[in-house]
Image 1 (cartoon, one colour):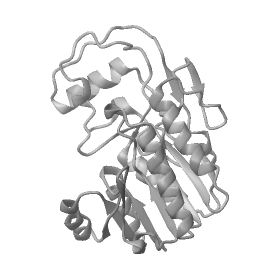
Image 2 (cartoon, helix red, strand yellow; image 1 turned 180 degrees about the vertical axis):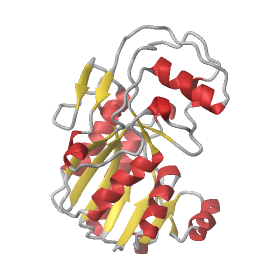
Image 3 (cartoon, helix red, strand yellow; image 1 turned 90 degrees about the vertical axis):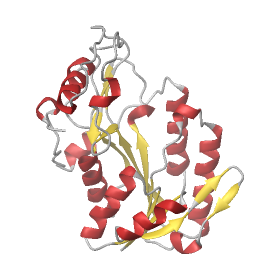
Image 4 (cartoon, helix red, strand yellow; image 1 turned 90 degrees about the horizontal axis):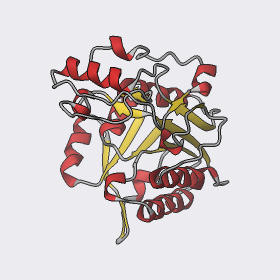
Length: 267
C-alpha cells in the first residue's frame, strides 16, 4: 500500500517511520526545501507541497496513493482561521481531482468546549473558542464528502520527543486553573492509533485519541517539570473551564495505550 502523508513534520515523520517498518511505501510532504533531505534519509519519498493563499505547488505524483493522511494543524497562535479553511477546501478539491478514495484527517480534541463534562465521540463537540470552531469546520468539510471515505482522528495535546511537557510551564507563577484535568497523548500512542486505523480499511467516522489518564494540570506539569529538570511551576488551585475526553471508540477496538499513568511515566 502507498500512503501519502500531507504534513510530514513532528508527528507525520514519526508515523512515516512506523509505516515504513510495516512495509508500506510512504510519500511525505514538506513546505521547506531544506527538509526534503531529512525525509529522504528516513526512507520517505519526499515532495514539496504547498497550499497557500497565493497559490498551490505540488507534484501530482504525491497524490498517487491508496491512502492520504492529512496532518496540517492550523496556526492558532497567528490567528489562522479563514485561510486555514480555504487551505482545507483546496486540499479536498485536489483529493477529488486525483480520485483518492481513502483519507485520514488528523484533528484535535480542541473541538470540544470546556463545558465541565466528560465527552466522547457520541457527544456534540460544542466548541467555545474561535479555534475550536475552525477545527470543527475543517472536520465537517472532510465528513461531508461523498466521493471518498474520511476518518477523523482527534488528538489530545501531543507530547513526546522534542516536546517535553516540563518546559511548557517551567518556572511560571500563578498559572490559572490548576485543578483542571489534562487531555494529552504521547507521540508513540498517537502513531499507534493511526497505524491501527491505517491497517483496517473498515474503520470510519470520528476517533478521539487521548490517554485514559487525566491528572490535574498542577500535578501533571509539576511532575513533568521535575522529570525534565525545569523549575517547578506554581498553579492556582482552582477549577474553571475543563473537560475530560474519553476515547470510547478506541476502547471498543481494545487499543492498549502505552502511556496510561502520566505520573509514573519517565519523559
